[in-house]
Length: 130
Image (cartoon, rainbow, N blue to C red):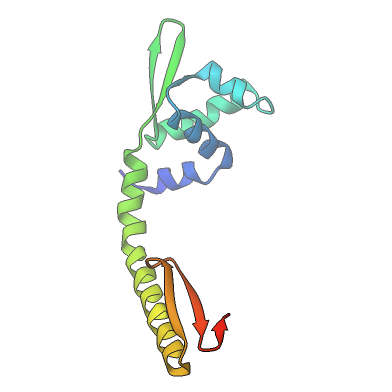
């Protein structure tokens, strides 16, 4: 399946909010309609239809109610296809930035103390903290 439908589905704030609601657990269509008082039942159903087509939501009819469930697999596919490919670029750039910052501090005679490994730095100069 092409990820185009997934990206289209994720492009809408309302659809992302529906997915957030379903992340908490399955919801009936009626429960989802009640979560969006500014939208008609028809509008919520249209959003669900886009999510169903993207396979982000699966549903099961039980009696008169339709229960909707989050399917995280397409989101994982987006993560694996796009995020993991580019996170290495950012990690490399941040590592290089850290190396350059530490080298600049060393040239000036400043000491660099990590407050949390790899997260932030506190700088002390020879005359005291800055």
